[in-house]
Image 1: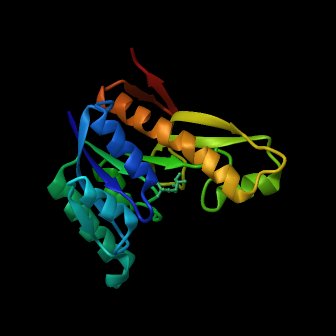
Image 2: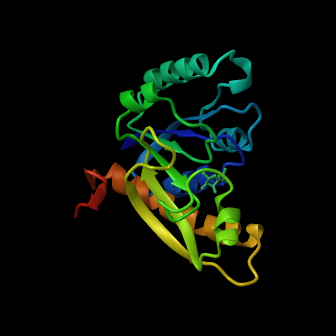
Length: 201
Ligand code: GRF
């Protein structure tokens, strides 16, 4: 049973998918805290509703990114998570935290990486004219959405798609692959070899 900390900035639908999978016993883990950099984030309410510890570390209250990161690092060190899941966490994780929790931080991203890293990627995928997009769960390294990929799901882009319709079909897949990736991690089945993540039996 692994201890998981989830970092989320917003509505927390991926957090909800993780909570639901844990409650269905599809993940051998428990969430020990949900941390948000945004006061009043819906993700914190979801945590509370499920009896999980909500922690606010409001970015706005800190005078520099370094100070915020320091507080976040100290909080994470106290919680000692086996895995940190970024679920709509809208900040780049600083180098010190990445070093301290090496290969223990994962993220969900709404594109087929390495295409379209960064923000507003469903819109970018539509504008580019790709026929397929999707989502990726990956380990977090120092770059932006650049760490080794654990699992992906493909979503066709339809001629009449809008940013909203494409985002919502991608989100459906996010809610499936994120819990799956977490369970693979919890079971010790992920082996990182360079850029490749192999699934052990
Ligand atoms: C998701 O699309 C996720 O891939 C991206 O941010 C969005 C967060 O949504 N990183 P939610 O807060 O989990 O509902």
